[in-house]
Length: 282
Image 1 (tube, rainbow, N blue to C red):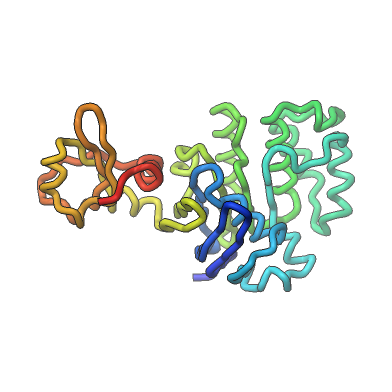
Image 2 (image 1 turned 90 degrees about the vertical axis):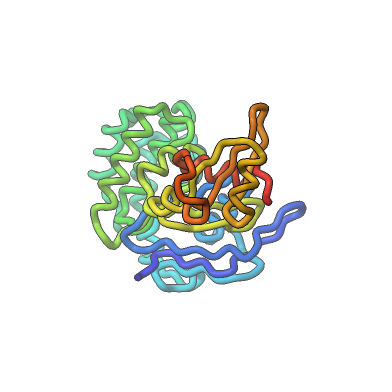
């Protein structure tokens, strides 16, 4: 399988935090969702992929090349959204198009204005006067208007209402109709990722906990609820993490390791993240 992003043993150390040996792939033709708490290392990883952070160790390849060897043509194929403030605030939508025409050799002004109109972005209003959601939409319109084969998106739906988020998800679905394309997307809105993603990568405290197919996660894990005695009877090897409540215990368990007939609730991606991040280990 061809990978549009390949990260191996990525390490970056700051005062009070370190990203340690993160390895993951973003295959061509797939969407990879990147989840984790604030400060877990998502943005550091994404900025490393884009060459905005210099790692202390490990390797990163994009389109099969070390990121330091990417040509201008290669970089034109990467669309990025890094939060709401990644466009100059004193520019209008028209100004943005003029600037980007000089930045990207494959700039598609017609596509940009089509997206701007779809997002109801006024062409003569300055970015600084946009709402948070409008800024996000403007940044995404730029990312989708220069022939990108890879989208790297850090919280692209942050600050948007459910209708606007759904609209962006539809646009990303359309983008992925070409098999060579990929999306690497982080979001705190895990339900959005469950709708869109093929794979989920979960990072916690600077370390990658897992990267798995989204559909396989619900088959692998379930939620058990019961007394401490009932939980203990399942066996240590069947429990990934557990939490204590006022009325008993709940646990993230491995479906294949619990006794047949055990009653389990479905584990959503958000459930799995919460148990690994906040639960106790056996």
